[in-house]
Image (tube, rainbow, N blue to C red; front, side, top):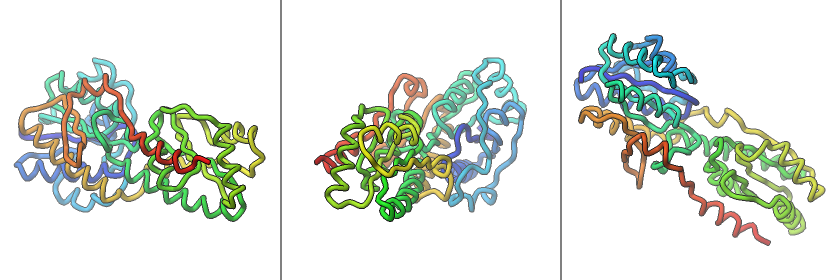
Length: 320
């Protein structure tokens, strides 16, 4: 192996650049050339390649987003398109690829491995919805951004004795909502994985105001429903001055946290060493603070298990 490629695919996540940096610097240390593939799998098929040096990546560890850019490219699910991508890699002398992205990106990494181009996947998504890893790249940063925003929302909620329903991202995974809700002292956390009783939530909010609280806060995962729709349902059970708020894509931006930088660096370094050992079709994750691997195929059958104890702790503290 003389040359490896690296791409970012799907939604961007803080820490992707830290992973690119780790891959590039580790590969160069082992005498490999590194090629950045711009715009994900779309750029792979188009041959949008750029050589990377240690100097190109050295200052990227603190930057959010991905300087290689990203794109969604569902066409890569087609076998003939996958073969075009593999042809581009062979044309440019690229022997292996590291793919940073979510579960959809892993399908592309597996397809390349089956076509003879060893590929390793790194979990780059703020949603934290990848099986067999405790944390994904960008999750901690997204939680920090959401918590900072909710802290500011609480100030205006308290000033007006209002209830705020705050939508956080995560698709069908409630990990951001649980972590941020507990850290923000929410009156209720609502996630797709657990049933909820909106009437009971209304009663909790009523009791809070009766006990002297000057605001109410519900943290709502986007996979449940929109904040405005939840607010309208809530108002059927209580006469609140309520507002819905959607944090949206701000959660993907910003400088990555220490945890995301460290995890991304560990996983990027580990991925290069897997390729040096001739391994492909693997997904890298984090377990007990250290990188681990699973066959990508296992991820398609597996199911992410969130830390639902966070929800239990919050419910215990808000019970009347």
